[in-house]
Image (cartoon, rainbow, N blue to C red; front, side):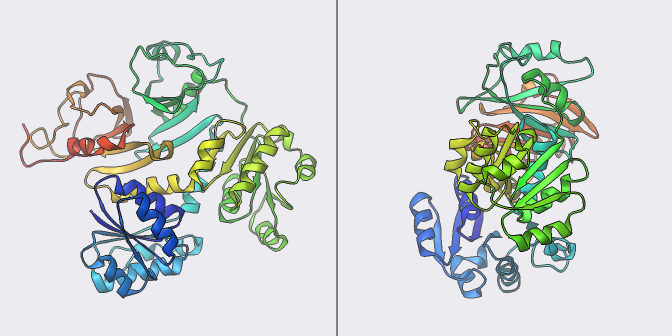
Length: 458
């Protein structure tokens, strides 16, 4: 595909890096020549300096024959106007806009097929908020991802000493679970390296284990890999920006929520917007304040300011003061890799959360949902089996017959309302939603080809 990315910030750079590795023709537009130079030196892409919403700049970037424009600048208004210019002047087929202001997203007519210049509106703040909310609802999870509208979930957990399955082979999972519960280990990462799971693979302490199960059975399966953690009651949110405020609003009906905001004026507005949350004014790195607010009795501390260093330091401080679990929002990938799994339990990367949503819209054909995992190293893909036995390489065939690449495993199949955990003799039927875990993105084209329909295939 020929893709134009508007904005060379952290999200735009991450998207460019991910898409350039998939044989796409990428052009990045930004006002800042230093950002463009850094990107061009690192990636095999074309760059154009200029204001992203100007028709002349879009034309210079190749909008007249582009397949897709992704507007990811820091300005909602620039993103909207750029999509409109691309639609009116260049008839670009697909336009995706990043929109941070919640009020824009409350108007679905912005993306109405018949009249709008924007085909897809994506809110990174909204996606991060949903991501953190899931982590709080499932104590002990590193990631919680939905497939087939939530009928199946892929969950990542770190195996710890004391877990029933730690030190045992994967085949023992079946004997540990209740008869009505089924699950599939899709992948294991050990010391940062992927392991394609076999029945004889032994789960070790420290392994990052990805498993697929029906959402009703997630907690049961998690209890096999780590000690059951007490339910969350108290949540402390540092940072009253869009993410912090929206997360508090989403959680306050279920949990006791406190929000800490540095700006007195901003704190006042947040307090007026929330119903049951306590809003405090102060510095998230103030040890005396955290002690006074009983941080040692808090179940989850979320550092969600717009400053990576402040988030890291305050989360480490909260952990040292006795908070059970700490989550930090970290934009720089190098920082996230450095701190996650140590003092900080989970480092949330807005770029990776956003990337999965973007890839869902960018991928061709039958890929209806894509989640980016492990800082972009791996992906979880939901593909729909379309056609019939003559035109499809998968329909009418058992899983053991499929010519999957070495780096791919099938976790399960959603058929109607039911999740079928992948076993070698399961036969794929038309319209099945097949959940594939891919630990090497270089083999993505082989997975896409497998689910592509041909005029005749026998």
